[in-house]
Image (cartoon, rainbow, N blue to C red):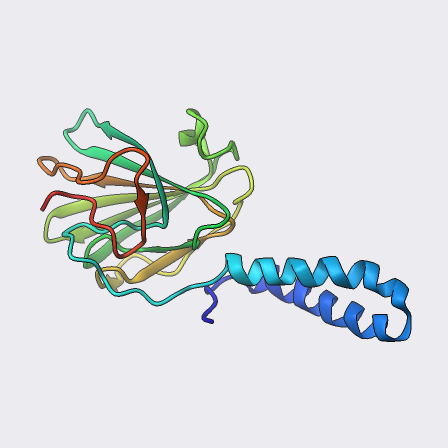
Length: 203
């Protein structure tokens, strides 16, 4: 099973503690009180940080995240924001909606409200801009109450392929995509999405 880049600071200490307490429990069963939950935690983290291979879907603009469409909002400049909520059970690796060039990757400091909160727009986030065949495409990775670390994989100037991995939000949260003016969404609120597979626009 492939694991996401950027998980080592979280995963390695847990794996090490699980291994040590498991070995100690062979000498003294009392160590099992620590070994059992640590082993379970390690298994859970391996699941949380999985990074499966994906075959890009047929849509023109693909979902950047696994999750559920939380809201679809028209924006004053004519664009449409599609917000995708990621639960802790979703794959946390985000992917490029379109092929293009990364023109900017900006980290913006903020709070850590739950991603479903109406004020979560003020949370810690990373704002991406991609120069694509459809023009500028904005994508925002938003941290939540649990997800307090966003790990971009690319920097400004990088070429990116459609559905290529671009970053990780540890333990879920939210990803917003701004569909360019004149492009209608093909998804609806409550619909499940798969990163790099689900088409977001009517094409």
